[in-house]
Image (tube, rainbow, N blue to C red; front, side, top):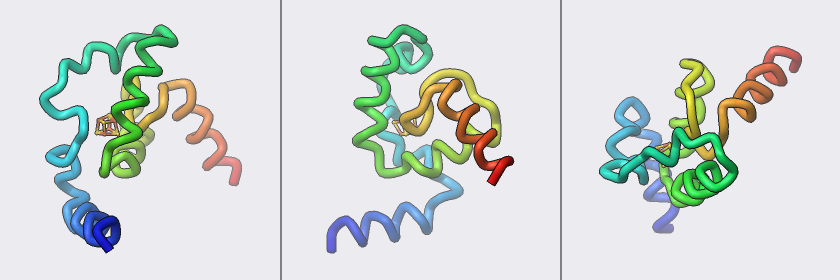
Length: 86
Ligand code: SF4
């Protein structure tokens, strides 16, 4: 029940998803570190984030640099290409 309530809150606030970001207030330097270690550390934070999907959609649409929504630029590029094909 708790997870359902959390999902409802996130969906209702999708326009303001940044306020629920797990990375908010962190030094996000490693989100833009293209090494395997930087990507791994960033993805660990994203894995705990309640607004990961909204973040991912934003990053895909806006061609953001670095790790967003638990994905790298390369991974999002692949996702975007796959969406065009489907
Ligand atoms: S998914 Fe990752 S980058 Fe996006 S808001 Fe959450 S912690 Fe930050």
